[in-house]
Amino acid sequence: MHTTPTPVPTASRAQRAIAAASLLASLLGLTACGGGGGSPVEEPPPADRRGVASVQPTARAAAAAASAVAHTAAATQAAAPQASIASGVFAQAQFVELKAAPGATIRYTLDGSLPRADSPVYTQMLVIERTAVLRAAAFTGGDVASAVSTLTVVIDPSQTPASAAAATLFVTVAPQEPDTAAARLPAHLELLQAGRSLLTQDSEIAADATQALPALPAGAVAAGSPVMLYVNGRLAGLHTAPEAQNPRAQ
Image (cartoon, rainbow, N blue to C red; front, side, top):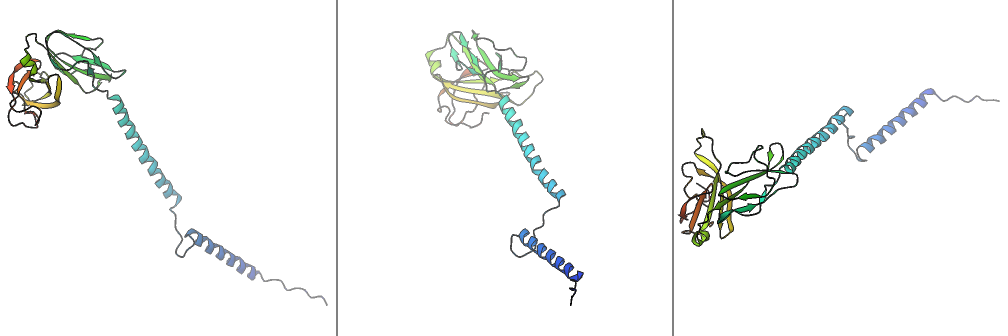
């Protein structure tokens, strides 16, 4: 007798499919949380991921741009020109050669004023036959200038061995405009003795005391020592270093 097999109910297949899907979802959940218990780790939606990812490159680009600007400014700033001689009192004319970084244009003045973009251009060795305050700066393009170098050359054929042995303080004060009424003036100080530099610094002095001996840092000159003072290349007198020295110029 032939027996017809009973068909598998459709509901049983659906149940197996549901069970398989449930098992797969469970496995995926374990993988997302690292294989341990707990809730699966949720990632931010794609839109948020794009927003977060775009912030870091923007910050890095800004930092890189700032670094590039600083590097460019440092590269553009040229070193101050160097003179072939030091400041001093000489019995005869002096030859001065100026050097700066390759490609820089040296501009200079001889009256103690600060060099500008329209100051004379240094092209050959300078011959200084009479007292002058040489100030020079290196220009790398347009109005971009280096620090200023200052050289005081005093031509005095009558100098004596005694004056040559004394400490010499050269004070350079840039010429002021007629309508300028500042109480204090920027000044460049250079102290030398026996051809050796003891002090070089930028400071300020009182506008009504430019012929007075400025206060010097402690130890720059021994108390009671004679100091020849020159202001803008002119002899302002022989002074005596005071007992008490002030770190700041007055």
